[in-house]
Image 1 (cartoon, one colour):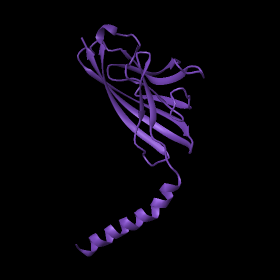
Image 2 (tube, helix red, strand yellow):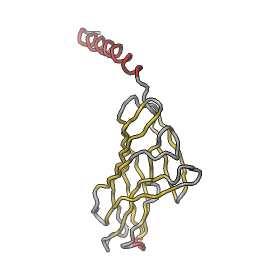
Image 3 (cartoon, helix red, strand yellow):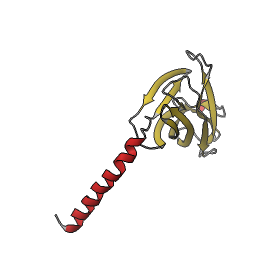
Image 4 (cartoon, helix red, strand yellow):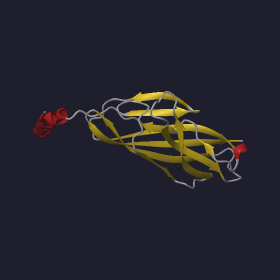
Length: 175
């Protein structure tokens, strides 16, 4: 092992020892998000502890849209999510959704919300997702792409955290 390798390994070990107490002082939350599909709550995700105050994840969703729905604003299935505070589906932490680009190659994307209230005594909760409208008469047989991001602040017993969920949609436009 040469001296450069020894120096790099030594500095990495010192850095790890210096940051470990700071990381242990404040526990960070697991990524807690819920998906909505066809008007029903379908999964509650609790991913690994990311050890950060701002959590960012990226999902990819592949979907099919029929050209027969030309110029109709359609909800993209599998695209509605929400942040959960205290790991409960019934919480409503503050969130914001953005869709980019609004004008795509073969259509137009927009943001949307859907409410779901089954089993929540506090009332309905909002899910955020995307809508898509085919606007190009030559779109049949092509693929379009939309990106959305949902940012929000959610809480647990250790504090308030900021989260971002980036979702990339690939839309196959069938004949």
